[in-house]
Image (cartoon, rainbow, N blue to C red; front, top):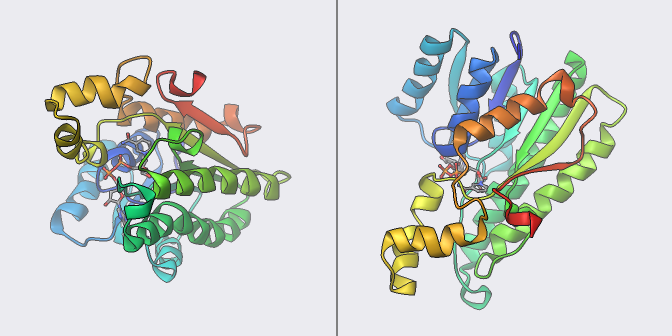
Amino acid sequence: MDLKGKTAVITGSNSGIGLGVAWELARAGANVVLNSFTDREEDHALAEEIAQETGVEARYIKADMSKGDECRALIEQAGACDILVNNAGIQHVAAIDEFPVEKWDAIIAINLTSAFHTTAAALPVMRKAGWGRVVNIASAHGLRASPFKSAYVSAKHGIVGMTKTVGLETAKEPITCNAICPGYVLTPLVEAQIPDTAKEYDMSEDEVIAKVILEKQPSKEFATVKELGGVVVFLCSDAAAQMTGTTLSVDGGWTAA
Ligand code: NAD
């Protein structure tokens, strides 16, 4: 796949899936803009490493995806945006009647509303360029629920709905909008849940991985960030030109059941 000359903006990409997606897009030739809410030397170093290894242009732009004006400023500062990957996300696990309001608000803002702002800002840029790809990193939790994840499940179902709507609104244009629905991928977001879950279930961390986390995933394996990056590259290819407003599951069979 040759994405040479295209610019990809990946929100929440100094870690995990977003970083893996940035690497695969860069390997496919796209210039990449990395993002998170921090502004550390190591954030910028990630972009330098990608540029050095792949030969594309890579930059890191700080923008807090919980703030609408910063979401829109990210697209403006990127200067170009042929590919938008809405990936930034956080998680909090608690029963709904004990769910902290500020966690609910932050999850809805970062996992859902940020994609509204970035997409709204990016579509005019894509229309001007005559080509565009919006890829939303949703989740198996955009299609199925689990207890104690009300905010996350609501945000992910919401982004699947937004994906369908944007797919329809851009259907007659050379722009597509799709959502990828990963099952479990071993990233900091998932690793952070393991110690608490182990305490809750009185299990070892290995048991939590096998009996709680991968219990939902029939393949009994985590998906990898490289595999997810490959699916994003596919959605940017000519072969995917007629795929829009839909979801692609990468979940080891979770949602087949
Ligand atoms: P991660 O914690 O490694 O990555 C989350 C990224 O979002 C980080 O780069 C973080 O800096 C960024 N981020 C958080 N708050 C932000 C903010 N306010 N502004 C800008 N960036 C912010 O986790 P991950 O697993 O790579 O998650 C990436 C996406 O994939 C999320 O949307 C998550 O819901 C989704 N997802 C993950 C899994 C999984 O099993 N890991 C499964 C399905 C979906």
